[in-house]
Image (cartoon, rainbow, N blue to C red; front, side, top):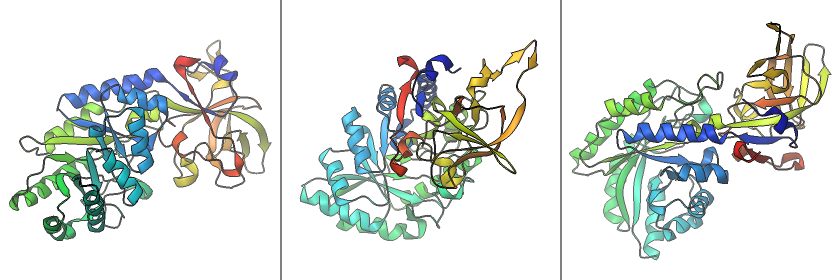
Length: 394
């Protein structure tokens, strides 16, 4: 549970990271992945907080980066370059050159033109760049349309009908070495059946390459494993056992191949909570408003794609439940639109949220915010950048 009295003393808003939850998650992840010899890379885009990255690195997990600055952050944090992969549809020349200079493990390439550019830049440095082709498998992730990435209508990856020409182009690309295939169908996937469909498609594509006498050393199946935003205490750690077992059962791994994963949200989401205080209670005609000192500048996901985060008034809770007296709930339940102070109507964390009677100064917890929370924060409205607090430092 949250150390309320300690949190009350810290100026809000801030991100509170439960270090024990993070470590338990990493232990479970590594234990289950190691059963199959799977290689895991952490997706820095989910959370690039220094203390989080150091914890991830300590478990021997690699880094999955989608920008040059993420590659730089991974290198500076101490991730070994041989465990860094670099994806993204729009890698700039400067970003590619930095990755080449640091001899990263692999570029996940998403178009034929990108292959030509990396080849040219590698040739100028007299280097050979290791490449994985990111293939768009046209598999539906059954998730939000903004975080679906594996359909032909999405901007990501090389389409199946392009493969023949792309593979033939390697004859002229002397400064590239094809070492793998990369797939990523989306994010916040809770239907494991989507991953089974991916496995079956990867098996087909592997056969296509084998028929052309092309040996593939690495299969990277991306990430996307979802978390439970509605019941974070009940489902604190994702079911890594079922997730990795599915790939163990359905992915046809060739002799000597390594299977790679790029997990982000599943690792860090539940360890992070946005802590805020109530500034005002505003009585409306059709609803009541609880106006917080945190807004979309601190947690963008609800405004960006109507994402749900469980909202709790922890000032009115005891041992994770509403305060009780003689076995009776002492808090009447009211409905509030929980909103922030930003001058945008979209600055809303939740509508008609059931809460005990809420007052100015109450401490609010927006749960499951460790992924795509702090890392997406901004200074819009010239807001102060949100700070981080850690459970083992207060």
